[in-house]
Length: 87
Image 1: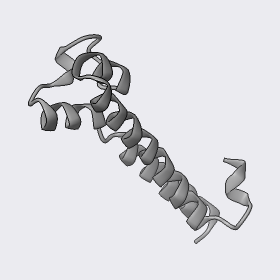
Image 2 (image 1 turned 90 degrees about the horizontal axis):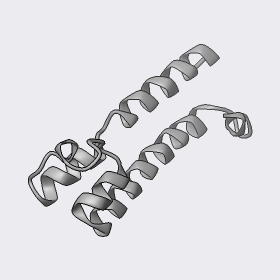
Image 3 (image 1 turned 45 degrees about the horizontal axis):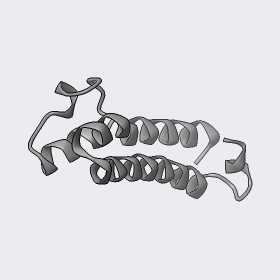
């Protein structure tokens, strides 16, 4: 793969992983609510923590961190050994 292809793959994967609304999913699974209708209206870990409790907030935080790690893993897999550190 050339540099442009790698950049496109990493950016597209970052966009799609980042677009997964962890807080909304956890809110629906745990309590059957749309978390965006409560608290600050956001779907992040802070609003989930305040609304659904610390355990749900920790799960959302962990899933958000995992999404970032997955994109970093894709970049590390596609780029030469040390070049991914630049990102």
